[in-house]
Length: 253
Image (cartoon, rainbow, N blue to C red; front, top):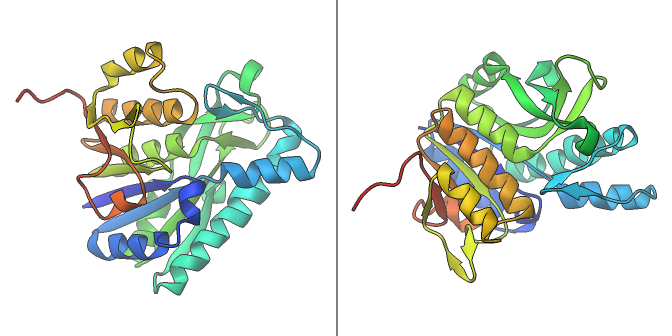
């Protein structure tokens, strides 16, 4: 069983995260971790006098933001998570999408989002080399601008990177870990969704912002053959029944 687990910035602060990820790594045939770190980026932007801006849950990234995004994600967030996993006995290796062109991306809506991209290619050989060598890849979503249209680097949403990795590796599960127990309708977790439900959820204002970005990534993964995508909290890493499951079609009961 191959699992891709994407951990958002706030769940990385949960003291239980390293131990549950360690358990997940030991029980899976292969595991790749992708992380976010939006709060780290925002703090660094503020420290340099810049204001964080978003559009539909995606960070607007100007040319002057790129080095800050690298510092926060590929530096602080990546190494903090790697260090915690190494302390739990894992052979964790920190990477970014820029390393050996692990993630190639193309700009998306540059007029609105700036230096932001979506994945177009994955260096599967690098990941398999690490996995088969007994290492745990921990991936920052900062990626290569494949065409060099906006330079060398694009800021890519971690959920999009996780979906691309799940598709490329034929993962049995993509788990998007966030700071809520799943997609919420009020206070209740929506147990199951299909990609066709997304427009209705947006129209009903049930999802917006960061959760909208997660569902868009989940829908893309399902549409490209990933059989099971789940959105859950840290406890959902160990408990496969927690959270919201996104599947291609809803099973009839």
